[in-house]
Image (cartoon, rainbow, N blue to C red; front, side):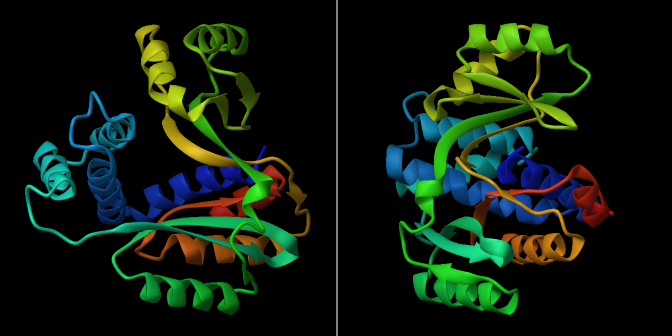
Length: 249
């Protein structure tokens, strides 16, 4: 499996262990606000806002909090103005990393990013030098106990492109624009996604099989993800499940 899927699984477990609910809320609220500013406050007319609204509600963000974020985005309420900034770099062992942020201070976020890369054995890269190794996809994960053939049939009928084995769960991929329609269609058939995200998926992988190398890569990933302005981190590493399990432990 890709760095996306394995890191996403690790992040979700870490989040559950750390009970990082406030930070998750803050990220989702910021995403809702920016989506409303860029595409308007109507969730039926703004597909990105609808995706972020749904994710926020699924994460139990209070409805009034989401509505205030939308109003800040549309200008009905005053608030900080965030902009999307993407950073590219390399983790140890040549692992490609893309970091998506929403920030109200580009200089501060850039300085924090350079600092966290350098302190953890990584290096920043020029725009475009890493992004060609990824493609934007819609990613949904499902309970591993579900029947593979039945899940595949339902996913394809819903408009998905593929089903793959994510180890602890099934991974369904689709076009980013089809993410919510695939999710809704599968839910109508009684199949509820564990997670759903528009994400960057690596087109080529860097195998990491040595424990010490894995710890270096994951330490950087963790440090980046802990920055307040970071919304998502993508990488193209491929690690054995037992190494990831050891890190999660």
